[in-house]
Image (cartoon, helix red, strand yellow):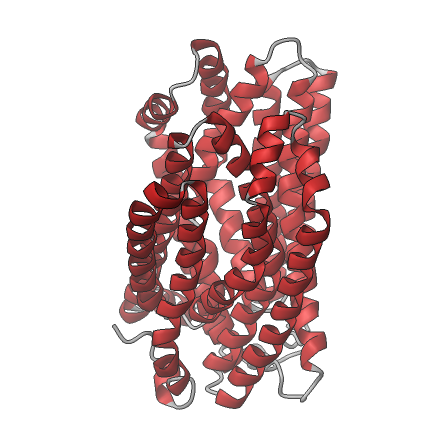
Length: 466
């Protein structure tokens, strides 16, 4: 993985070395990015397991419920700000590929300012947000009380959590995937250790889980800012401030972030509609589908590593206005992603039944999940293309196309489930979900030829055509 020239030895305004200029091995480059990202992705579900396990040893089930509900609230709340990671990666990768060191600094500082601002707004609105979330979830009074306690502490992580999104996105954009992995391990490692200390050692219960998260997010943000600032290698000057406040670039940042936010809302609506229709088919089907969706999450986390690698490499080639490297990145990532998808399908085909057994010992739920397991066997090969196309469009900040594709795909899912669920039951629901993933790939594919044409020449440096 190529990196910008060392600021301690390069001239102050020397451009970073462009990735790929040395004609290196593409597969090695892909996996030096994808491997750390996959490992970082795996630490997130591990943290959730530890959070649940530590409160699972407390004497009342309300503690597990409180952490589950509280974590769910912040998952939805912070996922809505995922554009801070994705947009930052796209703009940074393009500046990196173009060799524009000044824009690399601006590509970090603009979203950092947004992250801090949004974090302060979340804290200011914590009362209404907590009330709305607890009303929507409608848990028992005991669970809601624990969830409220968790919320009141963890809400103060908002600025640090959003800053960490931005730092992670910037590090991926400059192809420092291993540094991003280290920060993610530090974040989740501190959280896990403090979970054990605060809950099992000090007996703080649900509050201990929240305080552990707060300390970990703040610690990771401080460390991340120090690492990134050292990497940038110089203080801000007047020219940097002027570039930071450049009207066209600020408008581009806002447009990209709004597009990604709307696209994320469409994904959430599709997920919510799937769960709601599962509930309408009965508790057993709902539980079985919940297990299968966990397997779908594993698929997404696994394939996302390669999608993120493509996001970085395609964005860098796009910023460098190099169509040849743009196509090379897509071809190599696509081949590896197809291989990974086939491997995941083979694993679920061979071991899906014992994997389901790990999740539950309720015979009816196991039987339900096993009845529809073959949809998960099919899913990696179907889903991989939409993940890869997401990576291409995020890396090139062609987010209007992503937004439009998300609207169209959501419409396809809702129409398909409306027609197919009454006819085919849960098979109809899973067929609708599969068609949804196909629609995501097809709709983005319709915009791809124009994107590739813009990867060479001045258009690549001018931002997205609306």
